[in-house]
Image 1 (tube, rainbow, N blue to C red):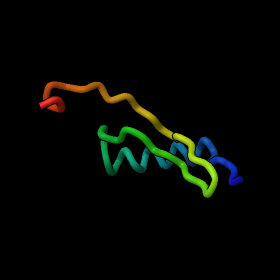
Image 2 (image 1 turned 135 degrees about the vertical axis):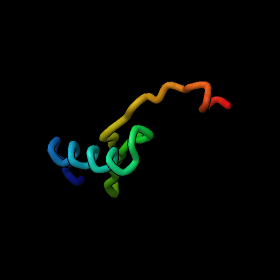
Image 3 (image 1 turned 90 degrees about the vertical axis):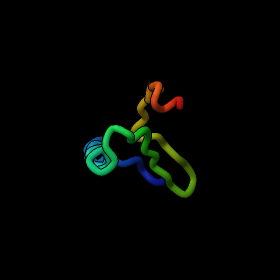
Image 4 (image 1 turned 180 degrees about the horizontal axis):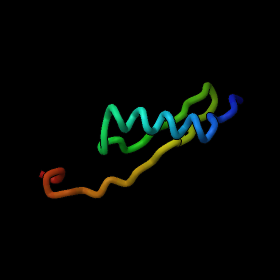
Length: 52
């Protein structure tokens, strides 16, 4: 089993993804050959624009 990434690395990955994707980033998942772990999960509330 691979060790999970450090908190510092997770923070850097989240910042890099949010810089490229913006507020639309909803989740980031860390995959290994045997496991998966959410590094970032944000609840996005639906708006009227998204419902149409």
